[in-house]
Every structure is written in C-alpha cells, then in structure tokens.
Length: 244
Image (cartoon, rainbow, N blue to C red; front, side, top):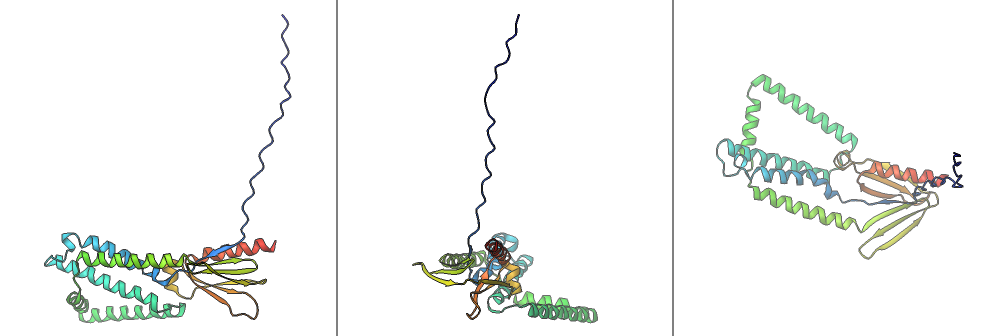
C-alpha cells in the first residue's frame, strides 16, 4: 500500500514585530513648591499625638503618671513645632548646620560634665521641663492637624497653577489660574543645581535650579523643587538628547 507523501505548504513565517520606539523626551516640567510643605513632620505628629491623647494613659484628665505622660507629649509637640518653624524662616546652609551641630554637641558634653560633678543636673532639668510641660487634649492636636492639612492642601493646589517647562532652547513659565505664559528664548540654556538649605533637603529632598538663559541675562532661580536630584537628572538627559 502506497503511502501518500505529505503535502507541502507555502506558509511563510511571520516576521517579528518591530520594537516600539521609546518616546523621546522633549521637555522637563518643573513645579516649585511652597515652603509651608516643610511642616509635614509636625502635621504628622499632631495626628499621632491626637490619637495617643484619646486614650487614658496619655489623656489630659489623667493624674499622676498619666498627667506626666500628657505633659510629656505636649512638650515634645511644642519643641518639634518650634524646630519645624525654624526651617521656614532660617536657611540652614552647610556651614550653619555644622556650626549648630558642634554647638549642640558642646552643650551636651557640658551637661554630662556638670551631671558627673553634681549628680543631680539631669533631675533638675527633668523637673524644669515637667513643670512647664503643657497639657493638651486630643481635640487640640486634631484641630492643629486639620488646620495644617488645609493650609498644606491650599498651598499645593496653588502651586499646580505655577510651573516651568524647560526645553533645550527655551524656558516657559505658566502662572496664574488664567494660564498666563512667559517664554524665555535661550539658545544656550544652562542649568545648575544648588542645595541652599540642608534641612529642606533632608525633609523633602528639595533644592534649587539656577537657569541661565544667556550670557548677559540675570539667572532665573527655581526654588523649593521637591526631588531636585531627579529633576536635575531629567534635565541632564534632555541636554544629552539635544546634543545628539
């Protein structure tokens, strides 16, 4: 019995799909943020301490040890709030930060030396802070949390209408609800990164971009850029693509 030869098919293999072209970066959007966002530590602390003060061990109605605990978190909140406000009004440059760290270290060393000599220094310091420790209810912390959230949210929404676009040969500023636009032509655009405030960089990784549009024009300062390292990296990539 003869076996039939297999029929030949003229099917051709499907060519592989061409790889998708990656989008080419044409511009970098830069959005300066208000400095009020630096208050996020005390905002978060207000929420945490409000929850803590809702329970009896930290409640304001407590007496004895419970009252001391409420006064302790009240004092911590006050000190952190004061320190956080300093970040808004004082610029901690690298030099100032080093000087402040040395000053605090010297004070701590002096306190340790005095306590070693007297044996009662830390007890007196603790008694002083316990005497002035503010006792606050959970409502106090929740009110502060709500106010700070509203202020931060309003500042963030306002920043949405004020942003910059960096292109290889121009700088565009969009500002205002009506969308007012200012264009700076810059055939030789140059951008530099600066960290003017160490604490702002620690809290939000924020910094400044200095944009030079031409040799004679005054540089444009883009302040309080959150994630300034990432922004500068994208600007560098944009410059490399334009140079090719």
